[in-house]
Length: 510
Image 1: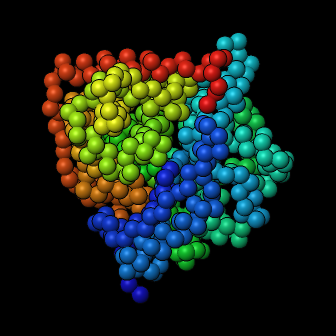
Image 2: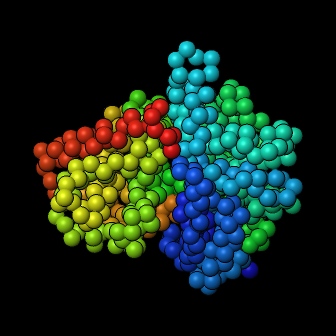
Image 3: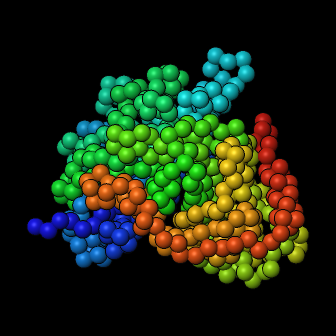
């Protein structure tokens, strides 16, 4: 039998699940994709059905193999990448989730975060564990979501303490099912996903007793932490006998797919949210400017590489909001045409703080605001302001990265669904004042997971070989001067100020 010539990546994002088959050159050979149902039980609550995610995963693998004209025997390895902080808890004996997956955007757990920030302190401190975790206390991360399920699902805490339940981010849920589920499924996560829970110590790369105690989370609930590239187990279904050998959280996977392997290299992903990651190598760098410190990757027994991250909650999902909630476009692709029908934003600025503001502000009291409205402003101006909001928020986290590292980025590599939007990419280059570069393979998240899986089984030799596969497709150069750029940023900062301090005793916590 000939040696398998392909690697398959499973990419579970916030809005869909995809499977992509890549060949040795890193080119796509087959794709399957299905949307994920978005569940909004209450304002501020965002959920997914874990069983739908697994069912869709099986289907998209089959679709990708069919499009590529392949079967399981042609696949050398499987990699997984996933929406990181989204939290699943299930019964080990039945495989049935005890509650829907609580999505990273969900804000219902603010009271839990407030309690932990106040424990034993005279003044609440959301940064009390930042030296250990690299993260502020925020609803964004998995720990408070675990606590909510334990406290609100009848019997969940007792069953967790006796080892009957399992917690995982989506990578763990998929791996457990891929490798047999109730019949011996592997309960494992990787260091990149574990670093997004508020429960892992960045230095030891292990679950931390102080953190578990602060959140009152039983260790029995948690998966084993492994590297991002090793053989975790063998797929039982639907890829019988294929090793599952790569796991990376989606933003780390995109960084890996962009071949940003070393200190000083960076990428920016435009997805449901936006995520700028700056690789700091083997050094843990703690931000003084509102960024997160996270694990970038760890290959087998090698040293962990770390990164600074600017996480923005609402970018691509803002365009979905224009489509689904306001109805001013019927498909996401229409937003560029609509925005191009006007020469500028008409004085309107859109701060999409639907879940508060993430990096670099970390203001859960903020809420979405459209400011500068006059009778002149129409839906095209709103569409343009929405696209511009994506670029303005990215400029904020790039400024924070430059301040933390003392290294001014001279270019930004981009990926994700929104990079097809030429208007956005040009405005982004204008605001950043540096070239914005799009790669030939835009699906860098899935590609990064494939790379991690392939390295573990020898499909690719090393990161030097992977770096040689990266190719530029297009670049945008700045077209405005410093004075105009500074003016735009001043008005944006005024708009951000208007979104703050919305949640108080007179308003409902949404």
